[in-house]
Length: 243
Image (cartoon, rainbow, N blue to C red; front, side, top):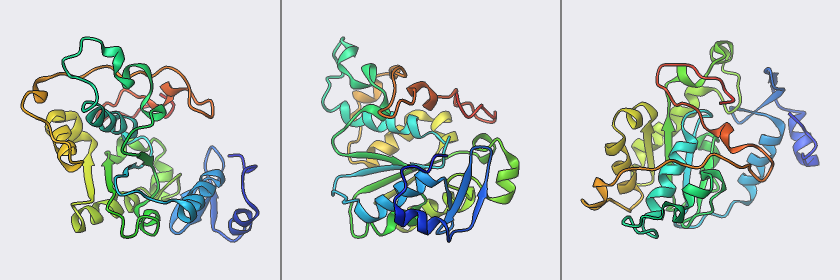
């Protein structure tokens, strides 16, 4: 991974950190988690400068665990309050014309792969809510060598998952732990659970309406095609990391 956007402070820090590498590049272990250099710069910026608002929602996951799907569901839950469910013009809904990663919503919505301990200090005393989605490790990691060694971007995997699971038990009002497989097998029940946690539960009439297709065309601000965030999402089958 490129290291041209690193501050001098980060370069100095990296020189003192344990490191390893995968097929993409060097990884550095910062506070128990492995990061590529530019990702670590973002983590440090977040720790120092993020100012949470009371209504913020943070969607968290290990990479390739359903982040885009969870973000689309969350946006749909709040946008339904702005868009009439009886409208025949589907183009009015932002998910029909834009990608979940390109929509700026209200309340503010953030997605991250950072482990929970990284969020602790910036979110201290904040009432904002965190939703974490966990997926079967066999469907997440295609390189079992990385799994065995615990070395991989945002890994180790189990520590990442357990950090959110523990806090969901300790503070269920602010941390919701969801399972990808349950979202696939019982989507209605899980979406209702998500809506209730976020404070926007369904009415009986709304529960009868169906879903819609989400736009996956276009690119992010840094020129990454949106379709790379979408996969088939099958349970029990490993999928290519770029689909």
